[in-house]
Amino acid sequence: MPQEIPPPLRFSLPELAGSLGDFGTIIPLVLAVSIVSDVNPRYMLFFFGIWFILTGLWYRLPIPLEPMKAIAVIVIAGGVMEGEVAAAGLILGVIFLLLGYGRFYDLIGRWVPRSVVRGIQLGLALLLFRASAGFVLQDPVFFVIGIAIILAFLVAGHYRGFPDLSALCVIGAGLAGGLILYGIPPLSIIPPPRLVIPLAADFSGALSSLVLPQVFLTIANAILATSLLSKDLFGQDVPPKKLSTSIGLMNLVSVPFGGFPMCHGAGGLAGQYRYGARTGGANLYAGAIFLILALFFTSPQVLSIIAVGVLGALLVFVGIEMGRHSIKTDSLAITLVIGVLAVVSSITLAFIVGMILAWIPGLAGKKAGTEPC
Image (cartoon, rainbow, N blue to C red):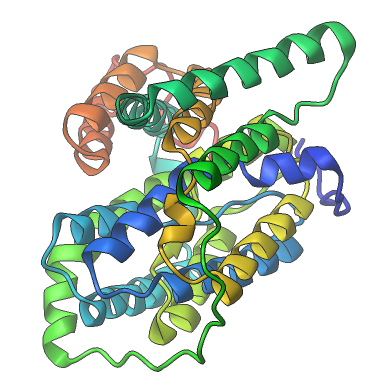
């Protein structure tokens, strides 16, 4: 049975190292969004910091935060401005807050087979490998340095019981390389946030172009897969409706003041756990780091000085951690199909196809409802 009492917060070096485990996903997305749009990176980082701290205190576990990926990708592709992003965040905030107070996730738990959720996890693992390949091409030297550091800590931990501080050292190496190449970034104080009020046209545009692609991804990855993985890693029951409620709250509070739409994520949870996070103390560390960056180092240059090769190295081992749990499925065939579709097409299509396959008589190993998400 899952434990009912969450662990106390810890503030050890492994927790600090684990707090950096999802930076390989967060930093590139924040940087790319800030470069191609008028969304301000200062407030993106500021609200990440606030909600990392609040999430750590609420869950007492290293439940991560990430930019909503579908929205981030569409913004990066171009043509989406701040008002439409804010409108999407508000709509999604209302949707997930309402879903968190109903019986929606009870029904999902009975009707979505475990093989489908595991397939989403596998797809995320494969997407992480693909993302790491892009970093390798950009910066092969620091990628190799990062891999070497992680392997060295694995060997030291196996033979000497040494704590895995590899993420801390990898990020440190990437930051040192960036400082040598680009120098120390300028210091500047963040100004007070301004209210972002979407227009009526922003809401209609956001609904079709941003909200619909994001909804299924958030339900599958940020809520169902994160809830299931928390049981795998911590023996802890984090109900989907609780995750939905926190997603709704943080978007309704943050987006009107310049924050970017945020959610939780199974990939981030695997990343933070892989590099040492075991309690919400890791979230408090991550929140403090983001707040310092937002309050005093507000230029996108601050994020871009980290050698991207080390981010790719982190992603490789996060993908391995995620993939390792994805094979605990009741139908390997369905899980594999979903994983491949998530890479070659989209997680939304993979989820839909997986549900169809799972309910074909005789194809799935166990039907939905035997092990709720």
